[in-house]
Length: 186
Image (cartoon, rainbow, N blue to C red; front, side):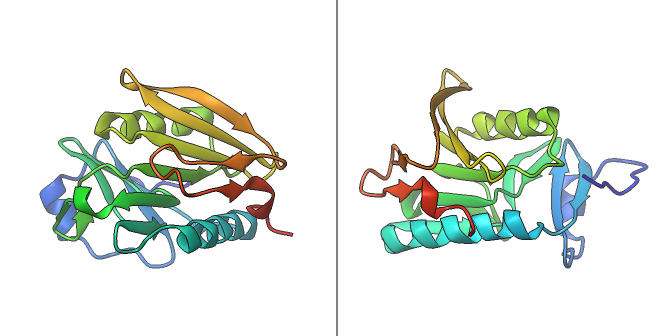
């Protein structure tokens, strides 16, 4: 992951006045701006296919499904804002402020890329746990596997490790079923 050189950290108030970054993804971790290049094709197609599968089954009157490039504020001090690949919110739990989301989605989907490090993944999971995201799916296009994590006592535990013959069923959206084989691009 490429990051811009920083001489200081950015505050929430400073961040609000900054221009939006084009053709890249920006996260802020403990005040440090991290610019990431756009997703490669396998990553982008996996996100898109998962989005389509979920979108067909979720009720848009009750839920909001967001994909990439939206700001999910974890905390204002030190500023930390993440950009999940996909997030599903119950509409009645959404808190928006200054154009950013300040509430936990009920489901976050993260697609692994070869460049992701264990440390980066753990930092992101710790941030999701901090705001109380109850379920996270970690999709590995290379391995064609999905790790399902549930929040328990402030930490994520692996509930399931699934492969292409399995069906995903999000805990808080019991009517949704995802055939894992349909996630992976041809």
